[in-house]
Image 1 (cartoon, rainbow, N blue to C red):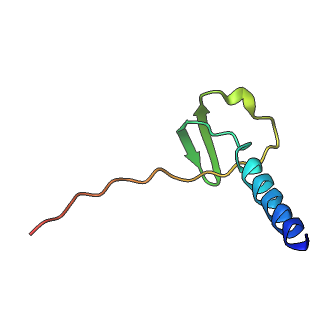
Image 2: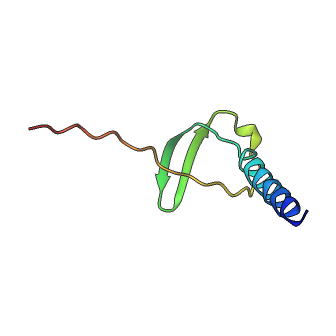
Length: 69
């Protein structure tokens, strides 16, 4: 009985932690200008954001050339 309660609690914690990750909105943006520490971007579906929202920005990875022999 005790093992069932512990396993059910672990399942609930896992389900809730994965559900909260799914709520984050993903937007496609292009950088218009950079002035010091201010960046101006144009985003599709920007109406999902509000003034003061904290966002995480990661630069796009550039694909490097494949070097051979």
